[in-house]
Amino acid sequence: MAFRGAVITFPGSNCDRDLAVALEKVSGTPALRVWHGDTDLPERLDFIGVPGGFSYGDYLRCGAIASRSPIMRAVIASAERGVPVFGVCNGFQVLTESGLLPGALMRNAQLTFTCRTVPLRVENSQSLFTGGYAQRQEIMLPVAHHDGNYFADEETLDRLEGEGRVAFRYLDACNGSRRDIAGILNTSGNVLGMMPHPERAIEPDHGGSDGRALFASAIEGLIAA
Amino acid sequence: MKVRIHVSLKPGVLDPQGRAVHHALEGLGFSGVEDVRVGRLIELEVAGGTSEAALEDMCRKLLANTVIENFRIETMEAA
Image 1 (cartoon, rainbow over the protein chains, first blue to last red):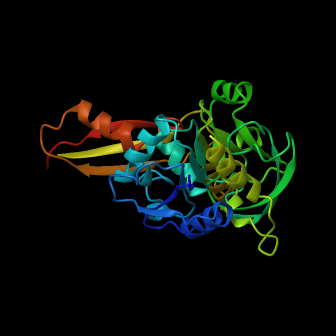
Image 2 (cartoon, rainbow over the protein chains, first blue to last red):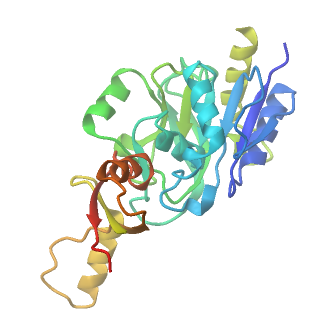
């Protein structure tokens, strides 16, 4: 059956097209586009992408308003039913604000917007999203954020580590994140949030291709299932 | 009825903005500042009789992120 992926767009999203293009290039099927004010998602989705950007101008807190938008109620319900949900950058902030992922993303420790390609280590290569990587593989992905400083209390951090839910870790501290955490999974492994942008690294001519395996493994895993 | 919601970072949560403000104060020659924490003040105009429970609900569901922030509700006397 053809892959059915969707990308949510909030006012202020700016990586929604990148994410839709990545899904289409890797799956061969155009991604469905969903507006934040919609109350229902398309039926039978295999994958929901929550993109990067500055939803609602980052008012109040990054991702705070978007996480309370009508469509997010449907996204949360789908995630709870096991539909894969992938949040990148602002999308990661939206997923923590919505409660789908633990912790919070705070202002970068150095207070500056960080826009560069950073080395990461794949800490869990067994998940739906990371199965295309080797365990502890080192990859390069772009980051572009002001608020990517991952915070959670020690107990939560220990639980994330113990349950293999740290998906990616920065190899050089780029924003002050606790334990250099760059991306985390939920308990069931069907929700991934990360600050780096794999959707901006799917073609060698455009910033590298280390992000492609994330989409490829998720899409293959879903089609095979 | 006017309500002020004071949102502040929890103790133990690093506050890079507060640290930068602290450095700037020192740079201006103000000595004796031991710590700076930057928070947020939200003023609400709500219907008279809005319950404390409803205000707390607003804080927990949106105005504060209780993973990293504490909030305090201050109800102002009607003018």
